[in-house]
Image 1: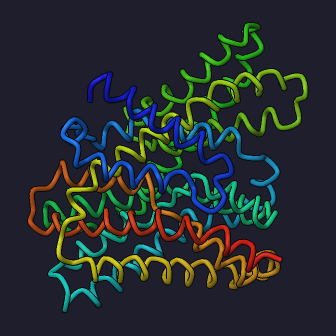
Image 2 (image 1 turned 120 degrees about the vertical axis):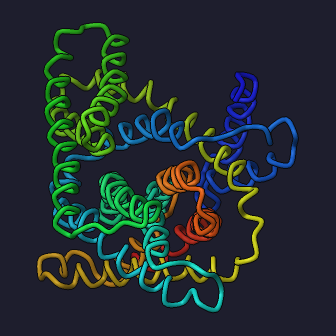
Image 3 (image 1 turned 135 degrees about the vertical axis):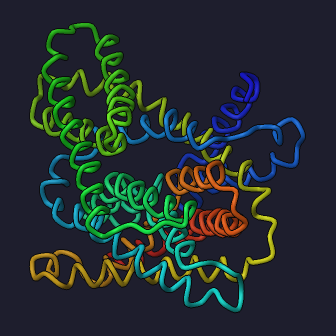
Amino acid sequence: MTTSQIVLLLLIGYIIFTIDKKQENFPVPIILLMLGISLYFIPYFSTIEVSGQMIYHVFLPALLFTSAYQFPADGLRKNGGIIVFLATAGIMMTVALLGAAIYALSGPFVSIPFIGAMLLAAILTPTDPVSVVSVIKKASGDEKVADVVEGESMINDGTSIVIFSVLAGMFANSRSVSLFSFIVEFLLVSLGGVALGVMFGWLMAKAVHFTHHRQYQVMLSIILAYGIFNLAEAIGVSGVLATVFAGIMLSFEYGTASREEHFRESLDGFWGIIEPSILSLLFLLIGIQAADTLLFDSWGFAIIVFVLSLIVRFIVIMGTTQMFSKWRHKINWRESVLISWSGLKGSMSVYLILSLYSETNSGDADIIISLGFAAVFLSLVIQSLGVSPLSKKLIK
């Protein structure tokens, strides 16, 4: 991807964000995705290649850190139990149920092995609510639902990567893995990332006191966001969870510290520019990359997979929140529907698809990649359009 291509894509993003000021009924990511698909048919842009590593190491740390440090500390205190459960055990249950359902219904449509169905389920479980969180708040005024949706999306990325990595290894090498070894690997990778993020987030909260110039404080935040991500990946723990919990630690540290308000203003000024810039590039590039894979013969089953992902997500959320009396009084069926619908697929799912594309040459992988991209496309378009009216109707 050349410098001129990047500049032109950013210009397109700037124009769309500027035109669509409200972003209420037609969130910007949909428009960018559609434009990206259209750009694929222009030779100048069709040469652009998007790698999973680009999304994972360039785009993701900034998006994760921005969401995490801006996440309200009170929201995590009030809804931490639900968020963590849905982002860990809830994701595992979703992968198991969705994978089994995809395999059971695939027969008349496509030939897909059981482990392939589970891999597709793992690709479609991480959520990426992008702009819908603000839509939920505007349409319903419900901070609780917005916090659960956003908090779950930050943490479940790390869970999804661990599950996907194990399943991808089984799929590529036709090997089995024991439940015990999976649990041990999951705990080491996840808890290691969390511990690293908390430690370095706390260190930054203290180190910032020695830096009196705002621009240098922002430099420190860039070092934290990308440094902790790459350090965690280098030592074999979750870079996603390390970055998320480093940001959350900052949110806790500065949640009640009025003397650090200027630091928050500096961070917001910088990352507030970076976030829409990255989102513009990301969704345009997703459209360009997905366009070719969307030309396949199994769209009927792709629609079934998308519908199944919504149904299974609702069953897991409704079932788990109703299982415990404390959660039952906090999340009713209406809110469960909205939380389920707001779990859009996005950047993490695309990264997992591209990882499978680059690492596997199996013919079975091609149909998984096409179905994955199609389900992500349907999710971004249909769910984004439905968030605002559904919020207004369900949350009263």
